[in-house]
Image (cartoon, rainbow, N blue to C red; front, side):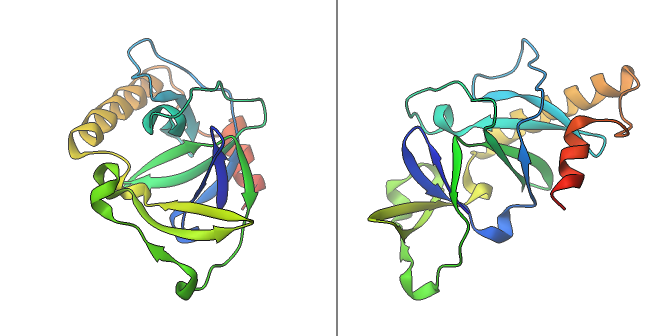
Length: 170
């Protein structure tokens, strides 16, 4: 899955992406960290949406109406990654992958580069996007949001636009 964020070409391994979703309405609690664009409900769970532009220190750009989300997992919990746009979905043979030097990227999240068009795309590993401390904070934030949804009686996914979007891409 090749996509762009702030003019940079990135990629995710296809097996790391559970679903590709349109950007739903996001709830943004006041206590949310800046890299969390907000939360949405998917299959009865609160799913945080990470802004990769801010996480990687790229030029910040507000998400556009049709910005794509990649639903993935982080430490067993659903996590969505916000991109500017999808560029391509293709299979790259292992022989065309160049391993990245893990010491040159934050937390070793860039695992390879692959050819794309006249340039390359950096392959990122979603399991390495966050440090252990960041992951604990995100998990706690997600749990608080889930409890808030439960108190509001909003744990059922029936009629949830994000769930319907998820159903549409299955």
